Length: 203
Image (cartoon, helix red, strand yellow):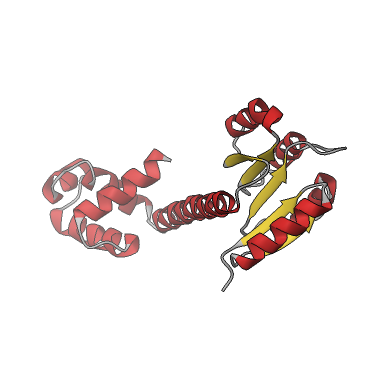
């Protein structure tokens, strides 16, 4: 099983070859590009998962320009920049613009592999969180208006009889609505329900 996909962008053939060999041996599925524009032209295929290892200084479109172009396309691919010693200030700027990391050339293989693993793990965790939030909101969307009213009052700590008084109904009806809310939200306790609602509201 692949450790993840890595997209290498560097204008130096020797660097591409060496890094492709290194990362391939580490279990990554590697795709190499000799320039930023070539990668950008191929971008549609790369949105599922992966990490971009990008040379900062290249002729034509440079690394920062590619980073900005990806941002305009709402790409979430994590980027690790490779910089020369004279480009460290620019590397720091890239981090502030959202890059996952930057390493100076000549690149230490172990550090690069560790940085890629960290970037991929962070990327997957972020996407997992997005998926979880989407799932919670999808469950909330299945509630009827009355069930939503019951939910909002219950998570505020009101007892069934207090909810009934607020809504002008009887406690037995509130119990039925509450049971449906718990079933639709796929929780068994009030604590779990409160956590889900808080998660949805915080985002």
